[in-house]
Image (cartoon, rainbow, N blue to C red; front, side):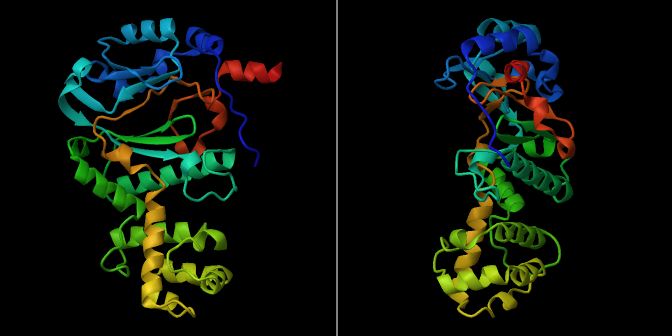
Length: 322
């Protein structure tokens, strides 16, 4: 699949977007209903979100700012504050997950790190769906939103049950949904052990021999054998029959342990855990322009039917037709 033709928006294109296309009605309700409690940050010139500690009491005030300043990037806090303009009086924060297509630890398309194609975006979408399914099914969370962020997806959860969690508890959620911690009993049929096996199987299935050789203690002969008999190894992982993996020639207990550690570290790389544990993080504002790639950040109402075309600004479409 071809790599996406992304270009940096010019100041003139940004002004055109915010004058003719940006619409306050595209800001999600979960942000609109708490607007005055959030800190807003802006990157006005492409040098980073240095314009911080902004508070808007009404959406009209935010609209005036966006249209007059045409920011390079716009952000809103996941946290709610009593005094957002001072970032004081923390009340609670969304639980957020950042799945960035350019930073996926494994890519089936072959794109190098930092580069994305439509397949990368689709792989990030599938990871986001997988994580959200676990959040809903295992943690009984219901208010789960997806945002296309320009080069990946944000999951934003607003259930009251999790919004007051501290950093350590949020980190444990990351470990759980990613399969980033080796369980004490991998063979258990339900719960985290099942999630762990599913994540490890997904990661292992995407490995090639070159990537597998980066695991500590892995020898070339064993890596080649595991790749040649990948389906057999995957079946053993999915069913928790790990004794079958240890039967591969060269797979001693130590090597097996190192392989599991490698797979769990890779699992953790499918989301940026620092984003999740940061209760004062600012994320791109849905409805705004990601000027670095000239794509719209949008709320995704149906993640299964997400189309990249929905996030392409008019000025990009018109430029392609010329």
